[in-house]
Image (cartoon, rainbow, N blue to C red; front, side, top):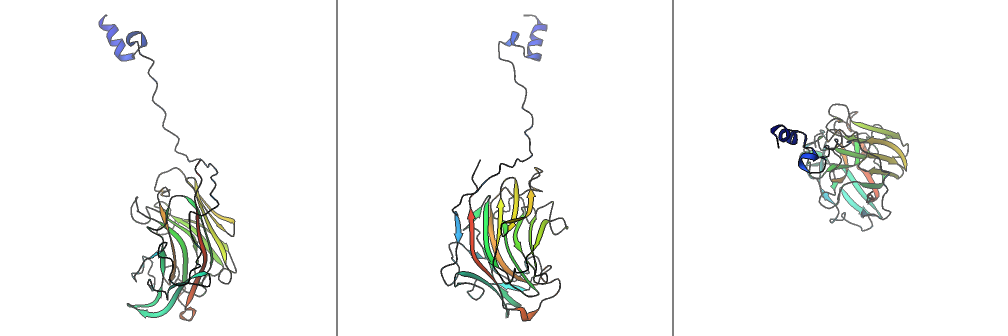
Length: 282
């Protein structure tokens, strides 16, 4: 075999020289744009609390964040794990913000968390709740990442299923925060709906979370739709496990924007149930 033929064999990897099959071209870079597969959800919860057993909340499902650090929002309360601030009675959970001096704070409340007892990747999350009234109240039902895999807030994300401030009583908010879209820089993604009876009646707050979108509903009406843009974790950190939080804050950067009315306390958020339904894979 001549030298030229040998070189041609190595350069062009021809079948006449190698007796091997044609070399296939490298695959193109896969499409990173997510596709909505119209996921559905199981009809029986995989995790739930119906709040039927009187006393302290079920310790197999809930823990507590405790302290009075201000929680990054200059909040005025000290969160405890006492039955005074979180109690189940008459078929509902009561998270009770109380005006009292405790550990250098003038208010106490509770911030319940399912971390380590209920951690989820995708699913349908449904809560039936009645919100507290009064200027200075700031109740929320929300989610944070369990492991903060992408870094501290907001890099690993936050999902606010229901958020409400007492000085704006008729509006209920649904919001997400990410590295690209967050409240610290005024780019958070969210929407609100007018609910004139939010503090007098129970309403259903729901989140449908899939690989394609985070969608928020109030009384089964879609209010918010945040779609995965396929731009990585900066815009979409919602591919890791998150856990549930429920709390009533007092004052703070948003809740206390128009002051705090001390006569509004005690202020109670009642929750009739919390249910999580598994997403059906496709």
